[in-house]
Length: 126
Image (cartoon, rainbow, N blue to C red; front, side):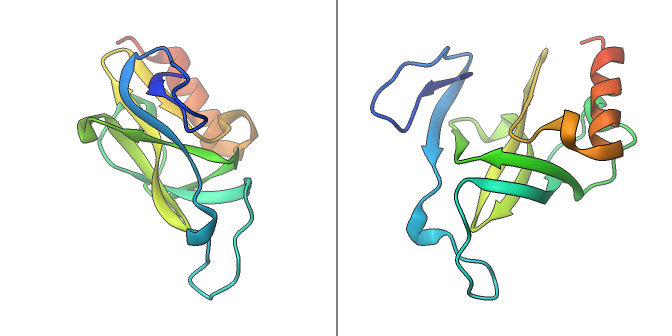
């Protein structure tokens, strides 16, 4: 866990980035059509690129990636938000600062865009 604290009490994280890890709020988990959204969030969802980054090279904005998670990060510094997603609520799905780039989704399970992200990571020279 890159962030300071988790939702499960004040469990310390690595504090590489300031912020908190939160559990999806069950009372806010509704789709735009009014149906209940399941937690954990499992499946494909769009990632809006919040800032340009070498790891996004060759990946269109709003590309779909595969997620499996019940928690999301709430960065203390909005400047580290590299991508965001909406699942009931908008949440940060990628963060970047200096030589750090972390994602909430599974690139290895995310088809061609996930493979592109991994290839970009391998070629990245921060």
